Image (cartoon, helix red, strand yellow):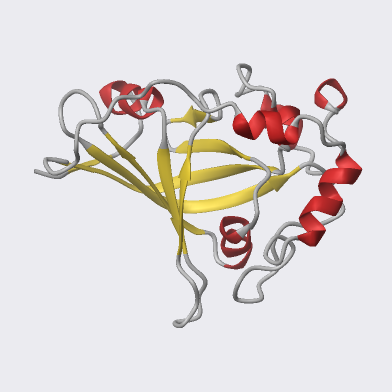
Length: 199
């Protein structure tokens, strides 16, 4: 049976921190807008900041729907599933914000992700989510699946990019600066990363 939590701590925090992947869901305000659902992986790219705040690193990709939706309305849901061990699904419903490279908070947020090199993955932003509703459900129908390891393809693809070449890569994509529904997406050109992590 589902349970509502007042904070992200204890067993709940341990569960979400141990999962190798999670999903994000966002949508524009327009009733006919495109709902977006994205899988997120790469060990070390997610962090619990406090009892009601989580964050993850937003890396290079072919679109920026999540960023666009957060810039418009801030609504976001994160979901974790247990593919091993006892069945469980956890959802965090809340308000999110994309903190970009030129934001004074950016460098401080990066300190929460010491085990991953954001520059090697074309880091675009840190997504910070403030939880408004935290619930779990049984997950009885979620299959058992085995986590082997992270793919190295993303790093291999983007670690050779400079800030300038990454900006050009994003400009060539149809839905990075602007979402599929015409909302403002990732601001370009990219600002430099903090000095210690700059490519």
